[in-house]
Structures are given as structure tokens and as C-alpha cells.
Image (cartoon, rainbow, N blue to C red; front, top):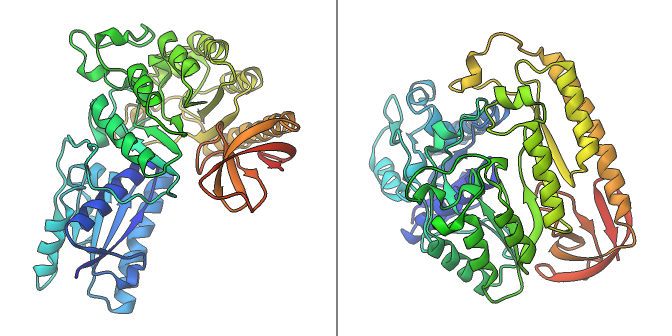
Length: 453
């Protein structure tokens, strides 16, 4: 029996792709192993969103090839994911040690590629290139999938691709235009997960707020115009349908875009019993000039109003966001405005990225106003220090509160305001069963994290 191992890098969206690859291989009768040295084929599912992700992906590929050589393995090496999709023309020449490259359209077609590789007596000078130029694939509720998360939590990809023109981002060129699943497909997948005992459904895509709108008849909805779900399926209609599923579970909303929020969506979340009071909404900046240069389709006034409306219409909402520092043209005043906004908005969670100049993006060609790497790093350090202080104050404000948590592992849990792997945790009694909900009282804090009894 053919044995396959997989290394998954990058975000939760890439993790779902890895789960689908493994599910497809299992359905084709191939054995899956967690030990790369035991595998006939090793797949590295890569990320290439920013420079750091590219370096990590390249290092993982080189390490796999070196281990194969040092151990004398007759193992085939396949590179999948965003790196192979983005650099499909260049990589076969740059990485002759790789036997095949696959893109996003091949994640349910890997088995025949593996059989073809193993049937070859020798490796070609360049690896096989199976990457298609314009990805069109989206998963369905019955797509074979081997979940790599804990049994009580799952990611559900509701759409693929992105239509936004952000000048710093390469994702639309890698993953193609936005294409939503049907609402029925998502509901049926979630029903299956809940029936299997899953307690947390994390909805993901490049832009979850655009769900369904790509299939609306007539003109494309414009940023800040509001969302009218009477035109067709939308994130609001999807959340209502998911909230009606029987069971005790959380629905968590990740990767939203500020341009497509509406009062209808806010009210849907406020009125839902199972939707966590948590939204992930990358804002990237608050300065009007920076948002314009980034082509974010919003401005500072709009963002401030959006944050106000979210807190006003969804009592108890927790907001996660991310910002970019050091984008070309960012002045000291722009950065000072961002720091002031952190104090003003009181985000429950926030992250800071240094600008990464990515070939193929609109911002790559900007020559004037580039921020020196030392200045970028200094601004990143300043912003992160500010966030640490704010996080400590927020954690301290929760002491004495009674909260419902989901137990992730012995002694570790999360509140509804904490997404898996990226947010804070609650330290609890180790006797509480993993995968269950529990009510705890917060009696201490430690920086970002909480301590409960």
C-alpha cells in the first residue's frame, strides 16, 4: 500500500486544503503516515502570502529533499499550495529535487499523480508541473476530508478566492476570483460536523462577508453600500440557517472585510444564539492616505463608524483585527494616528505586520516613500508594546467574571472571544473534559491569558 505524509504550512484556509488532500488520498486507498521517513511520497503544502511565509515554505522543501538524500530514501516529493500556484513557471527549474508541483485545482486529483510518479523508473530533470493558471476549485459538503484539528473544533471553508484590489496582497492572483459555495452545501457540512460531536465551527474564506454575493444577479455590490440579502444568499442568510441547526455549538466568523459589513449582518449576529460574539476584521490601517494607497475601499471615517456600529448593535462583541506598518508613504503622523486608534478602539485582539513588498502586487512598483526596514521594525515594536499593555488591561478587567469556555486540552480552554491557535487561552482545572463547554470564574490574569477556577 502506498504511504503518504504531508507537511501543512500557512493559514487555516491552507489547512483545509491539506485536510482535503489527505481525505482524497484515503478515499483512493492510500495509507497516511505522520512519519515522513516512512512515506513513499511526501507532500509539502506551502504558503507564500508574505516573504516570511515563502522562506518557511522553501526551507521545508529543502529540508525534506535533504532528509531524503541523507537517508537514501526512494521517496517522491510533491510541492502543493500557494507557493507552487504563485511561481508555477519558475519553481520546476529552480527546484529540480521536487518530483511534481500541484496547485489549488489538483487537491482532489493527487492520487493519480502519485501513481504516475511511482511508476517512473527515474526522475526527470524538472519536476512535473500540474498547476493550472486560473484556479476554479471549491469544496463541497461531500468532499472527502481528513480533519487535522481536534475533534471538537473545525474550519469550514465557505468560499475561495478574492475580488478585492488591495495593493499589498497577492492572494487574488494566487487563488483567483471569489467563488462561493452554495448555502445548502455549507449547511450540510456543518450538520455533519455537529452530528459527529464538533462544538466549534470556524467559518473561513478570503472574505467571508462576500459570501453569496458573487452569484447575485445584476450589478456587483459596491463597498460601503450595505448588503441586501433579498438579492440572494448572503452571510446573513447563511448564519441564520446555521444557527437553526440543532445542537450545542459555537459558530465563529473569521476573515471578514470591512467594506461589506451591514446592519443586517450585525443584527443577525446579535439575534443568533449560537454565533460567537467575535469577529475577525483586518483593517490594515486607520489613516485615510494609507487606506487609499492600500486600496482598501474604506477610509478612516468609515472604519470608526463601523467599529462603533459593531459595538452598539452586537452587545458583548469581541473584535480581532490586524494592521500593517511601514507601507510605502507611511509617515510618522500616519503611524501616530494608528497608535492613537489602538487606544481609542479597545480591540479585544490585534496583530501587527511589517509591510512585505511582494512581487506581482500593485504596491511592488511603488518607489517613492519606501520606509526603511529599521523604521518598519521600530514601528512594529512600538505597536506591539502598545498592544501588550492594552491586552493586559483587558485581561485584568475580566477578573471576577463568570465565563463559558470550550476546553481545548487538559488545563487549557478558550472563551467565545478567542479563536483557536491565534488568540488567548484560559488556564483551567485539568479535570475538565476536553471538547466540552464549562462555566468558570476568572480569578487571575497573566498578560494575554486568563486564569480560572
